[in-house]
Length: 403
Ligand code: B12
Ligand code: SF4
Ligand code: SF4
Image (cartoon, rainbow, N blue to C red; front, side, top):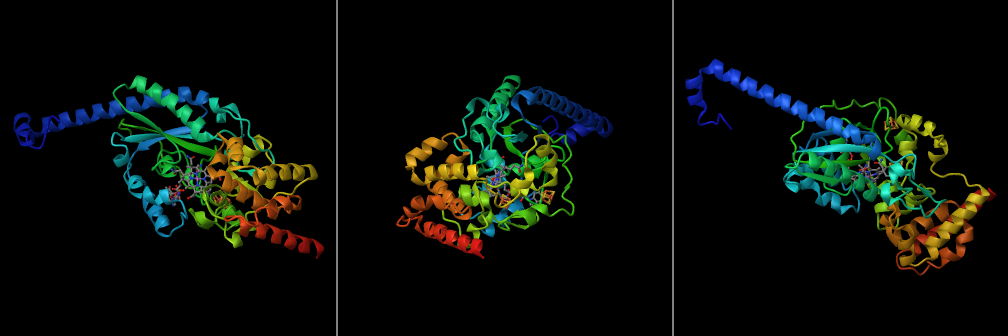
């Protein structure tokens, strides 16, 4: 402010160029020092809360246009988002996040591990008893809805920051917001974008969720962006049962089991149904096969080899429990289903989605004990086609068994 354009020639005359340039250098150094001191203090504050709030790593970056915005734009243009129209509506805001949050200059990014599941670290005060044990549910979803517990943790941190910096602004965000979270986290040094499109850290793997605190503080990223360690590996692309990873770092959401079982409000295309295997909600295969998650699975003796299969083998008692759980979703009213899955991520699919998913699993796992339940949908406006498919699938499996 001191040397505006109009005062600049005058100051040159008064101070002489060499003195002027020394003043400028001094001001620059002082502001760099101030910014470094601010960033060091922030690093300490965030480290102090890390263990208690349960984030595995964090960073921050300027809130500029995402590096991969052109990738996102092309992805939308190609229609790979399917029915997720909100992703198209968010285009302009994602390009310039500051138009959505006018006070925003930078954003902190946090990685919250969701594995092992159902621990206090991943539920906070929003803990719930997970209502089903046997249908195959992706790891992130086997507990309380993270939109509650993750937000709660971020909010307690944001209010701490607000006390320390009373004249600045802090806003918490996660998931369904117009922000390219993986891009921001990549720029903040939290990981690289893998071929499966997930953000991966060399020590922490990819089994974590992302959350942000958007702020008016002017911060520049002190961490280097991590190099891409996928190398010549292609395991995720080869293991995806529906061939949804159509190129490196490019996912056709319309084929992804996670989309088909959570976000879609339709019945899956016939050629995808067998490939969906026994996934009732979400899918973890492209992360289960990833070498960067193996030491995390090993540390908790998790049977990753089974989880990487499109369809898990069933023991007799597992079959009985699965039949029981799926029978509930096929028989219960919409209200009863909503009550059962309340405060868990399963609520996102709604009663229609969960019934649809139950039918696909019943078909692929040959759960003929559910014949009565399936036949009761033969006249259903939205699900009759899928009910017919389930019955036909059982016939095919019987023929396969005979041959
Ligand atoms: C829509 C959505 C989905 C869709 C589409 C996913 C997709 N890959 O596009 C569906 C329903 C399929 C989905 C599934 C899952 N999701 Co989701 N999803 C989202 C959401 C809301 C938007 C993602 C989006 O914009 N997709 C469009 C594509 C183009 O963007 P992108 O996914 O960010 O992908 C990046 C790369 O493709 C990249 N890219 C390509 N080339 C290059 C090159 C460079 C240099 C860079 C930097 C980037 C880059 O560009 C994109 C931006 O960085 C985000 C939350 C958010 N607001 O960001 C969560 C989010 C991405 N999902 C998340 C999770 C946990 C999942 C699942 C694991 C859940 C599950 N188990 O079922 C799966 C994983 C499937 C997979 N392989 O991606 C986490 C990811 C955490 C992580 N470690 O990466 C997020 C960030 C939610 C959160 N707050 O934690 N998801
Ligand atoms: S989540 Fe499952 S269906 Fe989706 S890309 Fe990964 S392996 Fe494929
Ligand atoms: S499985 Fe291999 S290619 Fe896929 S994300 Fe992991 S390291 Fe990268």
